[in-house]
Image (cartoon, rainbow, N blue to C red; front, side):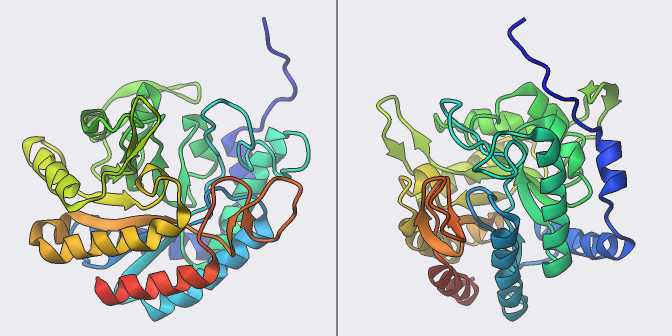
Length: 342
């Protein structure tokens, strides 16, 4: 066997017991969860903004950033519902590089998954306590969801995970809204099949149990652009792309049709500063077409305290150590612009 068993990780029951969510925070989260669900149920016409660092790296800078978001949320509360990004797992195309706080609670030290599990839960709870906004995280590893199941307000399934059976089945047993990204190939049928699967009931193995799910009707589409066989980025946020997906939604027996547009990744050709321009175009498409106005529910934006990115070890507080992000000043202007043009 080519594995070395380093240390046994704690169970979800142990972690939730030792790092609990207080009754007050549970109530705050339940109220916010209902607001988010109301958007997908067309009971609330506010616009969703899933925004924050590419990857969470240090608790203090992440929570400072989210506290700044909370101030703006109060100012735009009639137009926008903000869902902070606290992405604690980072997918790596080649398997190399920083894999997120769950692997390395300190990016400059050796991996320690046992401590990482505790660190990400503490960070999510602190952010919720300080901002009263349940955060989004990516379900890179389905089993890890159980450590955060009571704190998350939104879940993303990445482009490389969307075709995975275990992700689809796990999402079918989750009651949180889940965005399924199109795969890197851009094949929308893969994304739509994943949504269909997650919206229906299944029996499967999860965390050592045989479980039965009821289906998650809040599973929906996220457009993040594509990459062709030559490695070129192909955006899919334009009006024609949105209309095409709207027509596909009509053909399928899918519940609660919804689209979120990811303004970075292949849509921006990994040019983080293009995100405000892409946001403006999406907002114009919503204004132009009444169907899109209802269907396009929100945007994903990558942003942090300091714009750009840095290498591990440079130690610039609040600057991404993975993909480059918008800085705070541009982020603030962008949120107000989205609120004005909703």
